[in-house]
Length: 154
Ligand code: FES
Image (tube, rainbow, N blue to C red; front, side, top):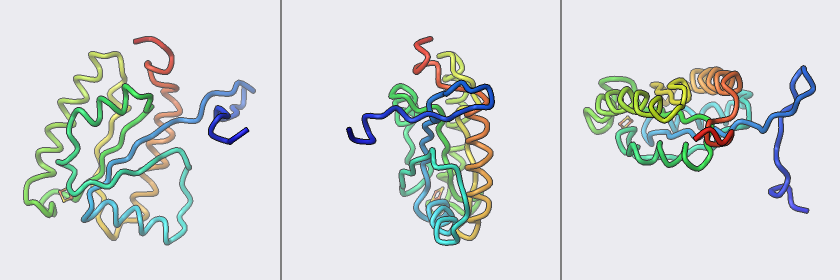
C-alpha cells in the first residue's frame, strides 16, 4: 500500500492520535521564498507539515486561493511577503495586509478561528525568522486542532 493511502497522524501525550496538520504557505518570490530557501539550505529544523507555493508577490494571493485552501482541508494558511516598503511591486504587500485583515473577519464568519490565517514579513536573509514563523504557526494550528471542514462542522 502506498504511503499516500495511509492517514498521517500525530501521537499526543494522551495517546489520542490526531491527523497531522495541513499548512499551506504562500511565499512571495523576491523575499520570503528566498528566506524559506535559506532556512532549507541552512538545515534549520522545522515541522514537516507545510507545503510552499511560490507567488510573484504576496498580493498575488487572491482571497479565493485562501478560501479554497480551507475548503479543501487546509488547517492553516500562512502568507509570507516582503517587509513593508520592500515589495518588488512597490505597494503589493500593503494590499496584502488589508486583504488578510478582511479575510480573517470573513473566515471567522465561516466558523474558522482567525488565527488559522497568518501574515508574516520575511526577507531573503531571514531564514531563522522563516523557521521561527513555521514553528510558531504549526504550534498554533496544533492547538486549534483540525479545521472545521475536517471535523464536519461546516
Ligand atoms: S514582491 Fe514580496 S510582497 Fe510584493
